Image 1: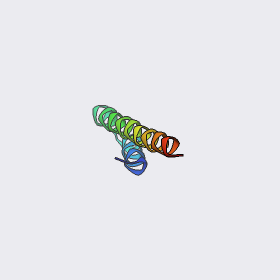
Image 2: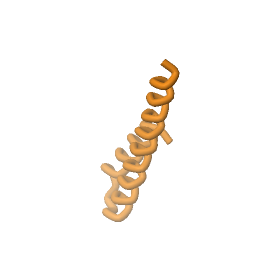
Image 3: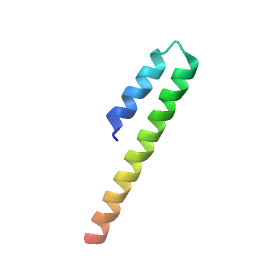
Image 4: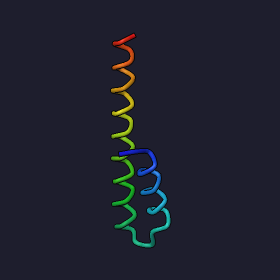
Amino acid sequence: MSLSSAKNYALRAAKSQDQKEAIELLSKAILELASSIETTDAKIKKLNKSG
């Protein structure tokens, strides 16, 4: 799960001619972003605890 995956999904959605496919790709992009944010948040919390 990464920001680049989210970006790729979003770019594919923007180019899609099929509305259903575009929605699915945007959903995947949002999930990738959420996962990346959670991972970053966990890393920050870990650093704050150790510091």
